Picture 1 (cartoon, helix red, strand yellow):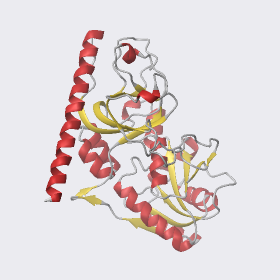
Picture 2 (spheres, rainbow, N blue to C red):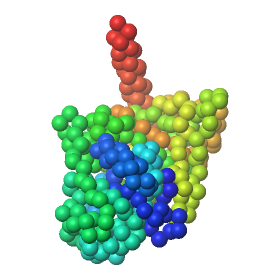
Picture 3 (cartoon, helix red, strand yellow):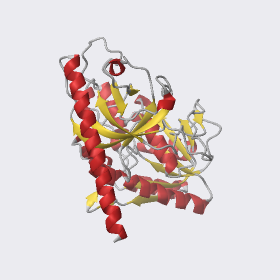
Picture 4 (cartoon, rainbow, N blue to C red):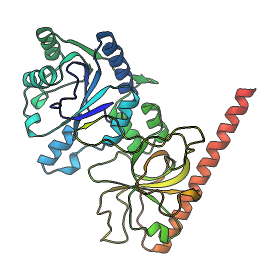
Length: 364
């Protein structure tokens, strides 16, 4: 999948079948929309294209109002969004910076400058609640009329439901915020996960006997927070004869691929803290930014002490153990982490027992 920041690039396709949205989480409703988009693109002989925005429009308006508290929690990072869009078969994604200029663009100007002149849309697929243009003044009827006038087809996808529940990013955020990880997985179509580069931290966990993998996020307000039992992908080597997954992006305004996570090695069980990590030290290098801090219950000896730094890993959050806690001493912190590890092991043991029971029933 090709990724472009804006649409003024020579490598962008001159025509496309297009869908537009924030695609936060790329949930099962999004996946159904992308499957339809691929089909329509193939029928027209053009690439499929996703137009999305960064930052999220509501993040932008919260920023100019100086009210960060009204910014929405987000299901996924931009990296994870792009990875999922590629997995769903999108040929190209255009990430449009949401700024004052875009916010002021009238619906007609958005159609003319972005859809027609910028992307050469031949087909446009939107959700049933799609609005666009300054003050969200544009609606489906306006887009459909523009399609007739400008020569592109327009279609609207109805809501996607799972067990009678409308699948939406809001529903995923609610499930994550309440720690209902199994419900979130049903809406997403897979366990909720976060990926990123392993970076250096304070190494306090190592001093306490709990080596950690740190993923740090500067501009992200996650929908989930707390302590979780997790699976870590991307640290172990693939089996003999299986290729390694690429880890490095091509960079620049035009990225020809999305950096992927090592896919073939066995995942490692662990326990993770997602949040701002209530700190014992006001001068913490984390600086209040969101941190995903993961301790693997069984560290691969081949990695050594430093072997994980710089790797791109994917952490699946399977089960919430509890909310973030603040500890008043290192002894209390050590005891808390020890209990979290024990609780995570108990969760994985229960998973194994349930899998064994299911396998036995299937055989019978």
